[in-house]
Length: 240
Image (cartoon, rainbow, N blue to C red; front, top):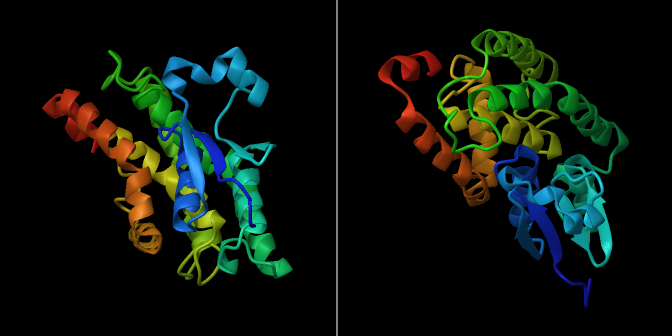
């Protein structure tokens, strides 16, 4: 890769998918720069950014003139274009298919329910007047119930008795999943607190990713501090 420039990642770390991309870049020591794009300020909607990504969404990766969108595609591109350990996106067809199986399922299941919880409890404008006041408590209750079914499948269909979602080693499936499941912590809600098997899995993923995990999730911890500080004792007890 002599003469190859560092990749450029356009990210907002409030986004689960953006955190996954940053963690992967850092953990695999892929030379990169980050262009911060604030979703809460609609910076992804500017004409300049729309030229880069007409879908006006994050993350976006730029690699020596090659522009790619969608976190799933970005992560798989990086795993194949750069010299990273095979466990991330195995070459063996059966093992790779297991990773693809989860990432295909993730978007319409884990991502959908987690995003709904975040929007109901915190909102994409994050540090707002609405903080601490769910837009619709009944809808939030339903979203949480829907998520419960998704967590059941995550635990019993994907994780089962393995160390990680697709086997004995961490993969892109674990990375995407853990970033999603960290998102409700923005409001102080730990959705895994009553699920010891998934809690153990999360700890193993966090340990495998080391410093890159907490660096990428520092924004989540910051939002949690501001959010829970605004909650009254009664609402805080309801959330936790």
